Length: 130
Length: 292
Image 1: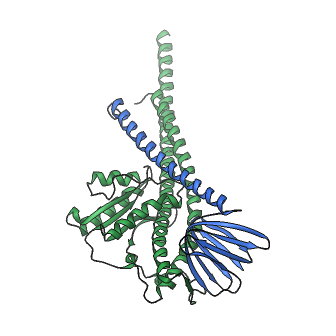
Image 2: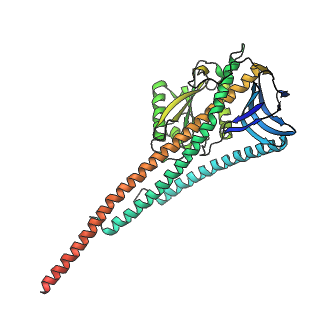
Image 3: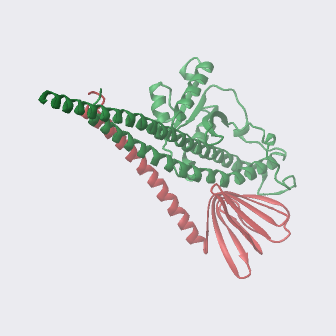
């Protein structure tokens, strides 16, 4: 079986696996094994556990869709992160998210302040009047 | 005639300006490359998402409020612009298109609201006294990421679902190539563009009958907002690429013009120097003649 995880930033993951477990807060948990019938399911906040042999990886997903057909699993996720355990991956995703939002806010404030100061300075310096 | 000193200082000033514009040109060029890469990485997701929605919509009894056209009392125009200027006609061409559209379709300001993205659009909307959807402006960073616009698109969808606005149209610059960008308008909500009429080849095997877990309704409720969010994100990526391309071209032109000016100034400078030398010579010769 093959799995591909696509995010708005491009393909995150594309590998051969034995089976996957899809878990989401809204719909609960189910596994997709080889020769499963075609299925579509959605994930609000959850993860996809990918298992090959005795190795497993977790892809934590916020807002996504899982689609399976012909032993090819396509995961479309708005935000996703691959990690060795679901907690670490989720933590990482959340910190990245929070930092980004905080940074955006800070930049907004900085930009507004800089713009205001520039306007004031231009006025004070009487630029434009020679 | 300007003195040699004046000309020399002008040459130096122009040279410095051209260095700056050249650097800006190169910065934009590398940012454009990144933006193009982001767009190519984003396309497969959109394609699959469309195919999935298509598939779910084929089911019976599946509908979603964002797919329904309703009577339009109020339209929301999203204007995607840049935060900074010096991008050639990038912002002004969008503003021109928006104003033309608004003037031709609306008689009074109750019929529409404007949601500017980027500071330039914000100040333009304020200057034109358009009614605004939100007071705070939306900042567009050069390295756009999906979460930057998640909150924004959620806000749009909420206003739409609450019935504050009945239609959302986005104005943006579509990136055709480095030299050409075109202002386009796209209806974001309700989602009406029949998904079938796409030029790209269909995703293979998408006409299968699927098992929906838990139900087609839940899935469409999940898929459509996702589609809208991604459409907006795609538009912003496209607009960002156009912005960099526009700035690149503008800065290229500025550098070329600066070089032209330097050339002419150099000519003037040489002429002034020659004139000064000639004058000195005449002085000396005149002086020598007087002595003799």
